[in-house]
Length: 234
Image (tube, rainbow, N blue to C red; front, side):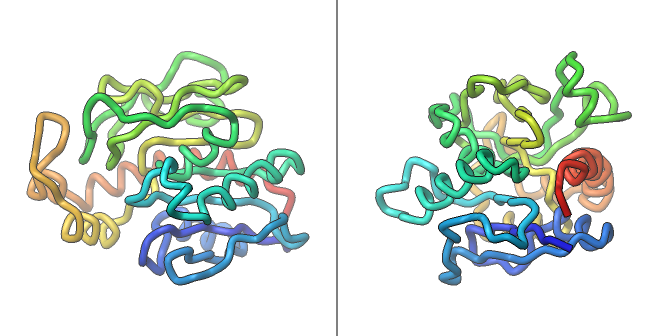
């Protein structure tokens, strides 16, 4: 069986719920830990069925300082050419967007914490978010955003950031973070928490009722991941 490559961009050894989901489905995966010095492949390996790109504190626009950003964008381009499905979380979604010619710019406001998103009313939103309610909770941690690339269909939005997620073929780019687990959320809060604003929650707000929030979001993530896995040629 072919595997999924998961690209981690921070000093972490677990990619959150996507890793748990793939394991539960018997889909092999391998972590590519960029901050640990793992190289970005120059081509799609024959034994790889899909690519997953996680978040990071850096910007896609830091490509002059971080050569791996351009390397990952080139790999995503090859994946699209070879019909290898790609899933992008936050920074990962921005990497996909950059490859597709979209600009990555500052969002008018920072968005950190638990905020609802809404499903768009189109067939692809129904396909990728099957049986989910019209509005549901999602975790966010970003101050940049992507524009909607040509040929993409937006499936998620909210008042804080209009483009929360889009799909194009068997590929999906998200600005939000459905991959969060309880340990991952606690780690981020303890490592990078900043002063609160109307769209930046306090650490106490983020951690309040955390187990229940994560369970709710895991159900959302499972819907997206299940649809994405259908496109893999395992």
